[in-house]
Length: 200
Ligand SMILES: Nc1ncnc2c1ncn2[C@@H]1O[C@H](COP(=O)(O)OP(=O)(O)OP(=O)(O)O)[C@@H](O)[C@H]1O
Ligand SMILES: [Mg+2]
Image (tube, rainbow, N blue to C red):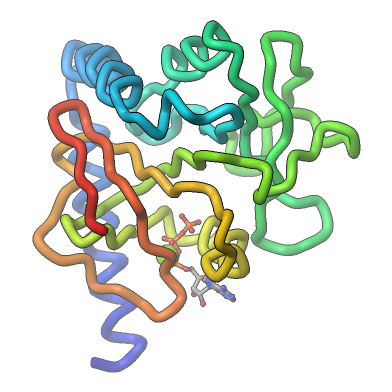
C-alpha cells in the first residue's frame, strides 16, 4: 500500500471513530468517566506510580478529571501536555495542580501556561495517559493526526526506564486492526470503561 493510500485509510477511520465518540450520550459519557477511573486505579502500575501525565477532554474523549483528582488525592504528581513553544509539533509536559495557571491553545484545548520551572521531563514520568482516536488489541494507536505524541515519544522507546504508555478510550474506539505507519508509537496498556488490554 502506498503512503497516500495509507493516509487516506487513516483519515477515513479517524472520521468514523471521531463521529462515534462524539455521538455518545451524556449518560454514556458519565458512565465512561466513572468506570475508567475504577479500571485505572486497579492497575498495579497505577499504585506504584508517583508521576503521571494526563490530558484534558476534547472532541468526545473520556473525561479524565476524576482520574486527575484521584491522583492528587493519592499524592501523585500530575502533568498535562503543552504544545512546545519552539519545537514544532511536539509536546512538553508541565506540572498540573489545582493552582495551575491555564490558557487556551490553538486547538482550543486548555493547557498550563508554559514556564520553565514547570517542565517535567518525560523520563520522570511513570505513566503517560494517552488520548487516542482509535486502537486495536495489539496496542496500535491512531491519534488526531498531528503526530504530536509520536514525535514527542520517538526517542524514549529505547530507554529502559521509560514511562508506561497507557491509552485511555471509549470501547467504541476499538477496531480489528489500525492501519499503522512506521512512526506510530504503540501502547503498553489500553484502558476503556469495560476492559484493560495488555498487548505485550
Ligand atoms: N517521529 C516523527 N518524526 C517526524 N515526523 C513524524 C514523527 N511521527 C509522526 N510524524 C509525522 O506526523 C504526521 C502525523 O502522524 P500520525 O498520523 O501518526 O498522527 P497521530 O498519531 O494520529 O497524532 P498524535 O500523535 O498527535 O496523536 C505524519 O505525517 C508523520 O509524518
Ligand atoms: Mg501516529
